[in-house]
Length: 200
Image 1 (tube, rainbow, N blue to C red):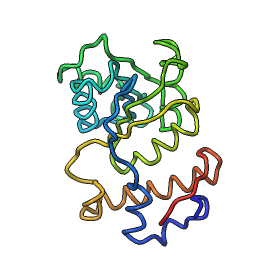
Image 2 (image 1 turned 45 degrees about the vertical axis):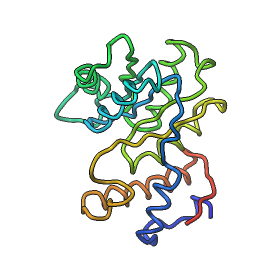
Image 3 (image 1 turned 60 degrees about the horizontal axis):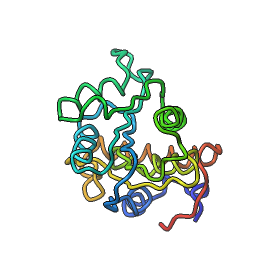
Image 4 (image 1 turned 120 degrees about the horizontal axis):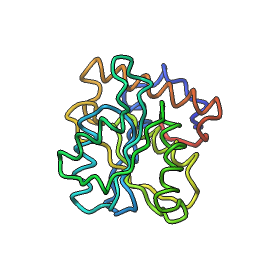
């Protein structure tokens, strides 16, 4: 079935799990840069720091602006930087994208950051960090907008909740998963993301 044909509100728990979480696992490969999607999330920061310490990539790209946070005008990238440095990642290994207000802008704006840092033509693999439920859309956004030769190692963060095996146990996580599934279908139908076949 094409994603554009999905009616998210009719999906069972098992179908939602397959839709958002199937194929989202770390392949263990090293990359040129750890790409951290915007969000004021300690879990994402800790995951990125661990990947850096494990020598999965020599750079960490922190993405995100401040448009979504009415009570705090600190860009997400700066918020994450303050925390990841405390976890031992040196400042000279960090790249910051401070403008993006959503997932698509995270990718589009980060291409300029990568280009200026070392050239997009040199980027062969990104080690991607986001929340577990957001990783499907993050990957689809990357494959829609990034150069076709870039490959991805998908590394969802290690939060104790909102994982493939327990997202339905929390009302908050159930709402996030339902909203995420609806967003993916909406963005595919709008042409923001490329359509693709999925097995549900």
